Image (tube, rainbow, N blue to C red; front, top):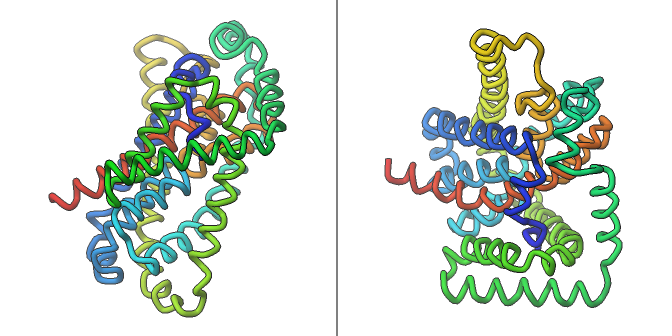
Amino acid sequence: LLLLGVNIRECGKRCGPILASFIVAALGTITAACVAYPLCSPLLLKAMGEDGLKIAAALMAKNVGGGLNYIAVCRSLSAGQNSIAAGLCVDNIFALLYFPATSALSNGRPDPSTMEDDKKYIEGKISSNPESDQNKTQANCDEVNAETVSTALAIAAVITWFGEKIGGQAAALPLATALTILFTTIFPSVAKSLSCTGETLGTSLLYIFFATAGAPGLSIADSVKKSFFPVGIFLGMLYGIHGLVLISVRKCVLYWRSKVQNQQVESSNSFVLPSRLLVASSASIGGPATAAALAKANRWDSLVAPSLIVGNLGYACATFAGIAFYKLFCLS
């Protein structure tokens, strides 16, 4: 349901430099996980058994895409319910630290579209009026009715059935993800008309799942306490290295442009502009909704629509990245 808003063809046309920013952010998370897991694996495996690698893969996927990717990877790898709840619990604590920090770093920074040398770029390649895209999205979101709900649920049910029938339990969700992306690419107008309905239904169901994951309460308290430290170390390294990658890429690009290209003033269409990197990082760590919220809060109007698109791109790719991560470390 959430993937009905994904349109791969829109990414290159409407995202502009923030697409490159998001790729850097996503690769930062993947790099961080690949560095952190070998160091944390003894602790994770001791605390969670074979679920240690599965939860690490799911957390990497969650911090490239979002909650739906965490669930998809956990289900595909048959992770235990206690381990799933423990991973969510620790990740939510780190998110409570990450989002205020991102908000503080973004405070007072200008919208790239207000910088003189980027106006033509914004007008020509991203949108003639970014706020109009936002208004159109809002208009579509108002069209949630019985017809769109029934159509979205029918499409989701058919795709899920095909995924389970062809891929079995292990590959059902990754295959359903691929089929949904194929559907939105072939029938973009139909998918666009159902995107807000899918987001409303999908987000509601996702919250219900998160609530049921924590429903056992005290019965899983020992499991959460046992795994809190190793999962916390893994996530601490993941978030930290993610940030270091973004900072390092920015510094390298600025050095290259100042020393090699003799550009002393940073161009506003640069993909390493702080506002773009912060929104891209938020899209990777928190998903499209949090990225758009960050852009709106800082009045970065030109980044609102692109942040939603790249966030949905994360949804589309993260499940496959998480499973690939698991397979890689299983082989090693």
